[in-house]
Amino acid sequence: MTGYVPGRQLQNKTADRSGSTVRSILTGRSRTGAARTGPARPHQSPRSSQAPRITALGGGQGLSASLSALRRLTTDLTAVVTVADDGGSSGRLREELGVLPPGDLRKALAALCGDDDWGRTWSEVIQQRFTGTGELGGHAVGNLLIVALWEKLGDPVAALDWVGRLLNVQGRVLPMSAVPLDIEAIVRGHDPAFPTELGAVRGQASVAVTPGTVQSVRLVPDGPPAVPEAVTAVREADWVVLGPGSWFTSVLPHLLVPELVKALVETRARRLLTLNLAPQPGETEGFTPQRHLDVIADHAPALAVDAILVDERAVTGGAFGQADLAGLEKAAERMGAALVLGRVARTDGTPRHDPELLAAAYDRIFRTHGRIGPWR
Image (cartoon, rainbow, N blue to C red; front, top):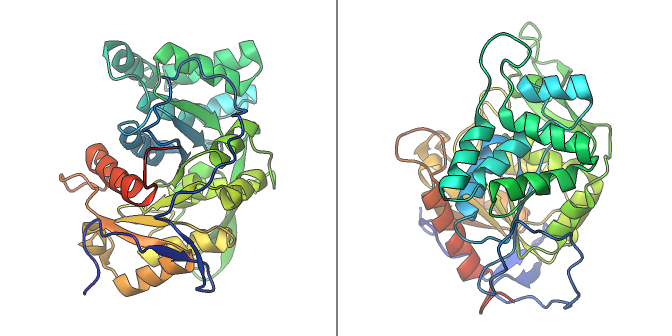
């Protein structure tokens, strides 16, 4: 099929859902010049005028992969992390202490640890889990450290900043909400005996392994407040990166926080969506690439996206089979986005992103389609 090549250039213009031209994504955007209002970030390196300000949204291993790539491109990097995990060590701490689930926050911090002996050592330490069958068994060291600072400081953002200083992280990690959240999914065929019936499944751990087909998700409580620093990070970014990750439990939750999705719709930042390398057993089993995009559009119809990055091999005979590329491009266009095909998967056959390849793909998009001169 013509017109599809790895890393092909974005179209000069993007379209809204009705097909009308809304803006050129090769043209720099004007800035107000207003002073930044975010909190001090003592653990960050000084901003380089050549480096983009990037905010990455997600959770779990998908966000870790994105951060591992993005940290190669900038130190002005903020991770906004979902807080709906209810399984494992995070679930136990959440139930016992009423705190935010720390696990996805810990993984993001580990991904941003300094690339030196200090950073690498701390990255391994906070990921280390206690063994045995006692009360500490299964808990990650970093989870306990984060919760201890939360209890000491009474401020989840300040506590994460202190952990970031200790670990010398290259960026900042924020929760998307200061309220512990639950995910509730409407699932068709959750009970195999009734494959066409709809039912509700609650809890991230349960949704992730549901045997049925997820139709939609919502957050409990409904309309939770966003962390103000997370909203600021979205509004003041040059690029916002959403995905990859568990589609319904790591990517979509950000679009269900009213203040956060409002910021995503209104931000002057360009928005990049990174598609997964394969359907996820349970959550998105049997989903086509187009269905992934349709799910985003259904949950956040006002959200426009500038670019969608897709692994070429995944959609041309890989985990998604031989995808309908024309249909995929149309789905991207409905979101106002240009489709960018590249090679970003590891070469070992596993559905995991290669940090260096993903960084190179991000860099091409940021440099070619994000500006026409030095950043700011």
